[in-house]
Image (cartoon, rainbow, N blue to C red):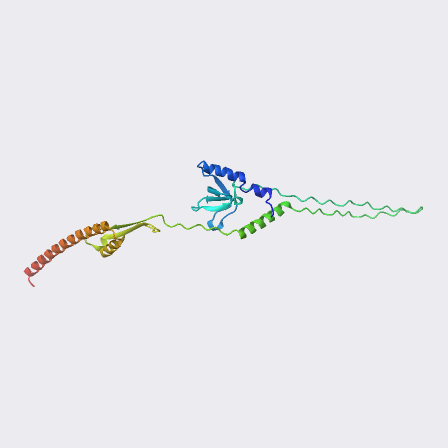
Length: 251
């Protein structure tokens, strides 16, 4: 199995870091670590801060910033600083140019003129220098691509509504539209009252099987019926007086 390089180990949590984080949790503090890689499914960038919740061996459970869920990470996926330490680029040694040989001198025979030396152009081989920084960037890109393909995306665990409040309101006016139901929480966008009929309220309350609720609704309905009966009597008297006036006026 290949061992991690010194730069990669420095960019992750060490055993000493884990001991320090455990000590901070034991003191009642919530230490902060930083994510080495981004989490695209949660829109969390690399280097995002996260609060340590618990540590089990080398598994650290954290709560990233702006995320309500707790996520488990291995120690080599976290670091103590926001930015990873710089990795020094390795420079390839420059190639040495071969030594240039001096041209051999021609010795002319006695009594003859020495031939002139032809100008020989000098050829200097180019030194091929490999760029260490480009090799480091290419290796980092291959490592990130392999890690992204191997790691499954973490999905936040869904949480339901914490509570819901249902309120039934009724007035002893005898009008069916005076009854209303208001829902707060449970995904409701607003707490506006919704009109309901008195019959629906009676059926719903009776289905609950709560005697106190049924008694309270019955009391409001009895009062509403009494007011409705008085109103009917008043309208009957007004109608009788109107008919009497009409008869007195003749046809």
